[in-house]
Image (cartoon, rainbow, N blue to C red; front, side):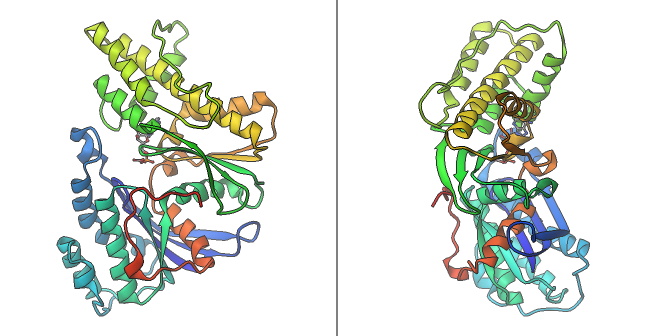
Length: 385
Ligand code: KG4
């Protein structure tokens, strides 16, 4: 089955085309035919975060060029034309996208694609709507089915694909999903079943990285910047830090997190210091990263122990963080458990459409196609059923 995945939930516009076959497990095979992505993070940097209406406008501009690129890579771009279907109605609020797509439909024939998978949540609703309406217009013009995908499921499915592990990993599976919008521990006793064990009560961990970076005058997105400073400090044998930050909720008897207080603690340190020297920035970055990682690893290990977890995966933008990767791997090793750790390659940790196409394939296998009119952007869509 050939699936075209579309992702527009935040500030990445992405389209991916895969060919996949087989059921979950040893028989499953897939190949990436085309993969195209434009990150808008430089455009949002001056705002210190993602500005929803700017994201919407950029998605409108980027989707058709990315579609052309992905289909080109997949050798599926053939001259011809298709009728516009319901384009003008579906893209009533995306005029710029409608104009670009009309031109595309009058230039290219229907490609050999069986199904379209599109993120319908969670994320920024104005941004999600652009991808959803684009998917509806394509599905109508090409007369193929549409499958809505939960973005968080995309992270889970993608992480299980790495290193040909899919055939080998065992349940229960624990997913630690850490990004700019989420901090969640999710337990799966079987494939595509989810139980939410815990989540953040306020800021997501990536959001805390970004906010602390702003306090330290570091550019957006702040996670990689803080991480760079912190790892440089750790590599310096004479580095010492006099800063001590709290480890919020580390000892609570649940799987919830809280990162807002940590950010406030950093603000107090910065304010009482007066001037922000490079040394102070480095000390704060290192201690802040240590605090976040300690809390995440401690709660994850508790869940592993209490639920007899056989496989643990991390996903989401913050899973690109080297310190969390190393600490989690080391702690699991020290603990002596034979829990398998699945980590996506850093370039796939942040948003992409490959994960949407992959999750869409498994949903399409279950025949979970949706009536286009029923698909809506759901900013707070949950994974647990
Ligand atoms: O999953 P993602 O691409 O999208 C959103 O949820 O928006 O994650 C982006 C988040 C940002 O908050 C960014 O600062 C954080 O992931 N991030 C990192 C690292 N790389 C990205 N945080 C810590 N360390 C990193 N190396």
